[in-house]
Image (cartoon, rainbow, N blue to C red; front, side):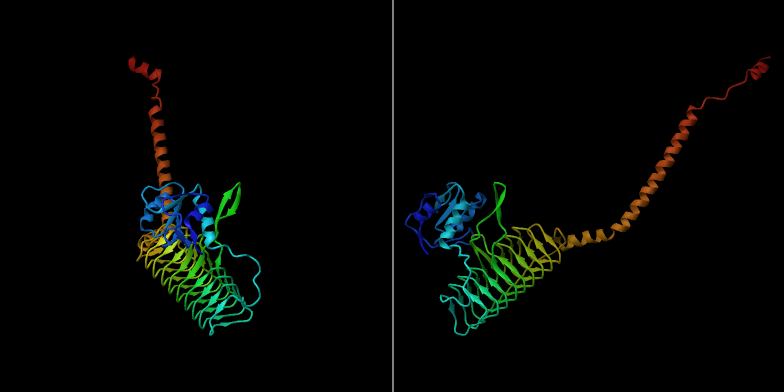
Length: 367
């Protein structure tokens, strides 16, 4: 789908500054995912410098930008305007129940094998030698590459993109809406869910995994990454190449991992975390800050292994330290008591009246 820049400005109810209104655009993606011919969005002024490297033909922003030659669509609410533009290029799919079996508009390779109980939606493409098992649901406009295996009861939401030699095990859900809401008049209102999931080549995804679609762009799983059972990856995440993600890991929205990252069992990442290449995070760690690559991180909050080992060594001594502190307190209390008794005795001695001299004795000595 192609749209003129002037018509997109009208759709967004914005003012077009610079550029040619007749410029043809063919997509809309967030800053960092955009390419030539795309419209992008600047919702955070601190990222304005990133526009210098952008190939986009126009940017949606809230105020005119001085240091860019890029065409600008200036609006009061960039997110709302960008939602309209993205939906123009990638309209939400109707939630009507899909028909049973294979939609006539689907494109299937001759060597693909699809179980009769699978549902293949409109506009889906399936590559050579790919096998789709019983109960699989593939919603409209998904693309599945060559030599893939989609096991029973997997659901691929609309627009999911799967490259070659990908294996997805039973019960996994790819492309559900992300957990994104904003408050309006005291109610939680869903934010835009117009993105999709991209699974690169040679990825294996375990059973009962959930990977949410991006808000406007992609949630991406890099080439060769292996994901264990019961893992949750939220919207807008970018998982690098050849990662190992173990069972029950939870990754919040907009996180990024480098290549050859290892996340052990039950690791949790807060949103907008960046992990460098070859980062290793130990089991049950809670990652609250970015982690430099080529290091091992442990604990919650996760810290480098050396620092965490020192913390753990101190923690192991806590029972002994507690006993020592109790003994010290007892000794100090005893010393304070002894000091108080000594002070009281000294004060009593200082205030005691001198012994009286009898009048009789005094009289005798006088005689």
